[in-house]
Amino acid sequence: MAVAPKKKQQSDDAGWLTTFADMMTLLMTFFVLLFAMSTIDPVKLEQFGQSLGQHQGSKKKSKKVSLSQINREVKKLVKDQKLQEQVKVRMDARGVTLEIASDLAFNVGSADLSGAIKQFLVKLVTTMDKATYAIAVEGHTDNVPIRSSLFPSNWELSSSRASAVIRYLTSQGIPADKFRAIGFGDTAPKVANDTAQNRAKNRRVDITFLTIG
Image (cartoon, rainbow, N blue to C red; front, side):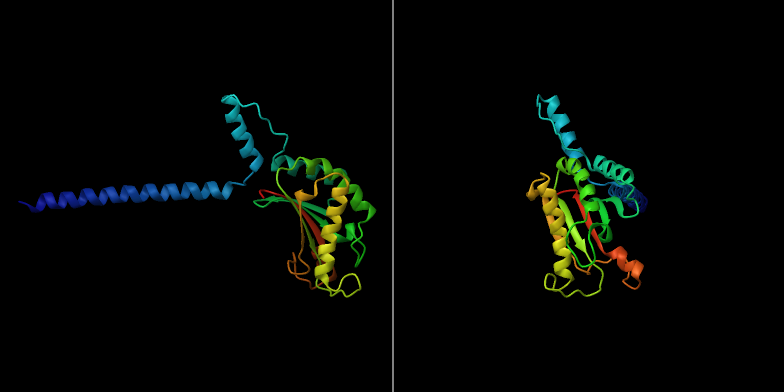
């Protein structure tokens, strides 16, 4: 007589565990989907906080722009200047990046800015002034060694090119503490350095409007 109630209790326990496991699986799937679809945009988060503050009597307003707006502005600029072949724009979790071909910005083995890139950078100033967080400027070279009195290696060349871009932008009124200069040399190629065309792709300066920091 005591066996039947015991089986019923075991059946109830098994049903509860199955329901709980299903719920946890659905929750995990939900949060994975949210993470996969999300790109952090600090300005939108800030504006959301400010909208809540306004309901509580705060009058603070932001003059900054979101990464989505920066993405639209720089793409329009590149298109207007007809530089789609020399300047590529992408947006990802790190931020909005302009990938500028070194052949547009510099002569071979030089860190002196060309007139063409100066004209382009000047038109970026307004957007940069509205950026919320830091802007990283990263120099990249191909794997062809360079040895000169100015640049003993590609490390110095890539760093000098990144610094040259920043010096010019600060001369146009952007605060120096907004920038981060980084020289990668030939350590972060986009493609294999196995043809002249691929080496040209690897010679570049990346300007990234960072998501944070």
